[in-house]
Image (cartoon, one colour):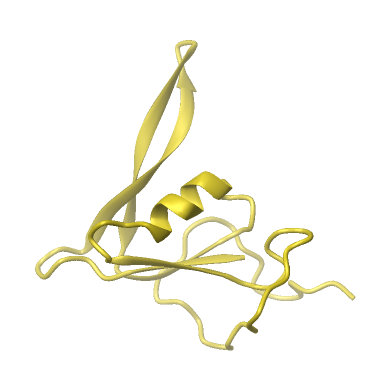
Length: 101
């Protein structure tokens, strides 16, 4: 799971940072990503490695990205997820039974 936490500028409810590629009419186009204030939980395959790195380099320093254990196969994670629920959630991350034996 990937958790994206955003602190928008004062007076705003969201912050635009990053993009995703989509194919429209046979052409690849980039669609801007807009993040709501608070934490957003995403399944591990929702963002590409390039998108995650781009969010980590946010020039406005308003977005942070945290990758939880088991997000990518073969990657050694350092922390454990807290039991705290995010204030906002995007995507369809499993709420229960997320770990496999």
